[in-house]
Each structure stands twice: as structure tokens, then as C-alpha cells.
Length: 462
Image (cartoon, rainbow, N blue to C red):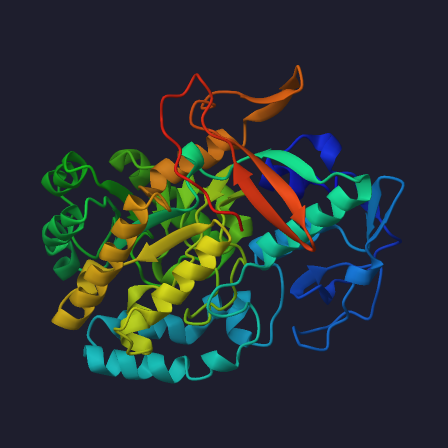
């Protein structure tokens, strides 16, 4: 069903979206454009590119509306899956699966703890020296998935002569966007700095999640876990031992996944993040977790390049993926040597324009000097201001996972000419409308219905 991903994204009634393929698809996959956005998959129009470039064929003119049906020259669900699950090659060998198997990674991680931080940074800056030359995904935020789906919805509405489509809004209580702060605890020093970091977060009334390494790195005591939870913060598992080899091969991953699942159960947690943001989405079914936070939106500054090209959560099988949509602190402070918050400001603005998820990684290990501490305070102040202005739902990752799973089960029904939401959690859900505005969409969100007493913040059109 080529409409599947579009319907899941908007949670709208099926009869508003009617699509079919405009021709036979190519036997091979490759790159092409759909308007301004890069796609990867099979297409009814060629030639397809082997690498992403500005010279790719644009298939948008081949999307034709006739008799209430939109005929498209590719399978949107296939293309979106390819982007979200990083099933595409790029112009950088560091984005391929082979990076997880490189022998130097084992040597690097075995020596890393003995390296002076200055030497470590020098090696990493050398590794990332070409990051500005990468063309895909787009820096500093890639919203290709979201924009492809928006364009398809525009074309679908036009094909049926519909100007206004009801759907279930992305966030609870009509919030325009969402933000989560996460803390990956890598060393004993980082663990011992967690209480101080919770004090700082609490000054801005922001709760965060702490990802702990369960084996080898440091001890995780019951007292530590109790303090985090008692104070309203969240615990998740961070890799197994953070040695960079979790995804080195399938057999090793399965062996380690058993240990990870043991710690997930023992700690009573639901979320996971891999060390170094290494990942292989097609192996995730071995993990007994509710959500993952290991996939970057744009991986230019990660050892494993690539990215999921979306600013929204999505499902990988039964697991909810909360993508890392902003650059993590180590990259910003250590690689880019930027303490101005300008990059985060740009990313916040871009993500919020798509009503997406702002996801931040701040390591307690690197909150060791005034400059990174000041930069993090500025970020907390910005998030606090957005929350107070009703522009952002600032919450814990587990709350986002539970909402996204709940939203996926809600349905829109029409009765007496009125739309209503049905399903558990409907009290916090809002009906929204997507309306044609030239070649774009604008969104409006209805106020809460009578069964909900929670006020809804104003949502600007986009």
C-alpha cells in the first residue's frame, strides 16, 4: 500500500489519500529528486543517480492527478523507509555499514581511555575534516521525509479537489513542537556529576533522561538510580560497555543484545541509545526496548555518517525511534569549537518550522568548564522560554514514546458532519486541519473538546 506512510504520518481518514503508481518501477534503486528533496528507491522514470547530487532527475512533473487519483512515479512508502532506515549509499564511505566493522575502531576504543583529551580531539577533528563537503543528508537539519510527505498530501488534495483535510495533530494538547534533553553518562566522572546536572536542569524546571552504561565503565548503584528517579528524571540503557563494537557483526550484536535486554529488565527501563550513535535499524528487533534514540537526523559529525532525514519520531518495527535531531554537545564544543549556541538556534528554528522533535544530547562528562556550562545554560533558558510561550512541549523521552505509540492507535471518525477522535488518549489529542496554500500546506489546530480540561497552546500556521 503506497499510501501507508502518508496515512501513518498524518493519522487522517484513508479516503482523503488515493494514490497509484505511474508506470513500472525500475529493477534497481537509485537517487532522484521529488521537487527539492532527494529520494532513494525505485522509480518509473530514470536515469537514477548512484550518488546524491544537484544533477538528479526531478520526478515531480511525472506526478499526475486525474479522476480523483494521484499517480506517482515511485512508491512513497518504500522511499520514506529507505531514508528513515538509512537504506541508501552516499558519497562518503564512512556512512556505509562497513564503518562498524573497521579494525581501527577496536584499537581506538581500547586505547581511548588512556588518551589525553587533547590527542583524542585532534584525531577526531582529522577524521571529520571533510564534513562540510558532504551533500546528503542536508546540513544542519534534513527534513526530506517531512517535506516529501507534505508535498504528496498537497498533490493528493488537489487530485480530489479537496482544500482542507482533518488529521490528528502531532503533539498532545495542541503543542506546536516537542523537546527532550538527554544526558549520556560515559565515565565515572560523568556519573559523579549527575547530581549537579540535575540541580542545573531543575533550575529551569526541565527534566531529562540519563543513559547509563551497564557494564565495565563504572558502577551503577541503587542509590544513584533511586536519586535520579525520585527527582523526576529518567533512566535508560546506554550501549553495553561503550566499546564501539556493538554492531561489528550480526552474531556479536545478538550476543550483546541478550545482555542489553537483561539490563533493560533489571533496571526497569524502556529506552536505549548506542555508544557513538552506531546503529543498524534492521537488527533492532533483537532489542527488548520500547524506544531507541541512536539515529541522527544528519550524521555529518558522527563516525557513522548518514541520517534519517526526518524531525519526527517514527516506528522501526515495534520500536519507536526518537531521532537525534540536533548536534550533540561533544561535536559542537569539541569538533566545531563553537560555544555560541548559534548552531543550536538554527536547528531549533528549522525543526520547529516543521513542528518536529528537538532532541539534545548533553554529556555530564563534558560539563567540566565554564564555556560549555554557559552554553548549556543558554540552551536551557531557550527551551524554558519556548515552553513558557506555549511553543514547545518539553518533556521526557519516555513520554514522547508513549504519546507517539498512543497517537498511532487513534482514529478520526465523522458523525453528524463533525469529526471526533476515538481511542485511548483522545483527551489529549487534537484535531488539526491541513489546508492548501498555493504549493504549500498550512496547519490549524482545533481547541480541546469538552471531555478535556487541558488548555491548548496557540499553534501558528506553517
